[in-house]
Image (cartoon, rainbow, N blue to C red):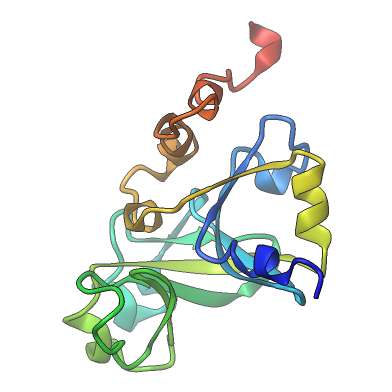
Length: 193
């Protein structure tokens, strides 16, 4: 058993791209890890809104989608597939999960977009629809962490539904109680400094 407890513990955490991360798919990205184990990792980028309205592709879910009511680009993999991530407020541990929702971490969970939206309407605090996702093969994310590509921080339910996703990278870093808070002030283009 080589450190598997270490691996599984990142589900529900945020990956925040370091200024050094060169991949344009993840420039200043904030990724919510939905699954992380020895088989790899899967997450969605929380701060890449598209111009596409949720109602244009998933009409029944449009009323439940938070502001801005658009589809987000969850990552570079499977852009033609949709993932729903919802926050269900209340007792995160005791209550039984509503039908059509599977807990990922705390109040955050995945929505079955094939289910009727009415099943979740009364329980959902916020919903985001993502086209595509970010994926890593076995050990790939761990290698990127060692290389310093990502900061790993705790998620908060409000991260999923931030009304100003463009500012999420800075706001997540700013709330850290260590030197990471200073990274939030890193210029968009350091060559202009």
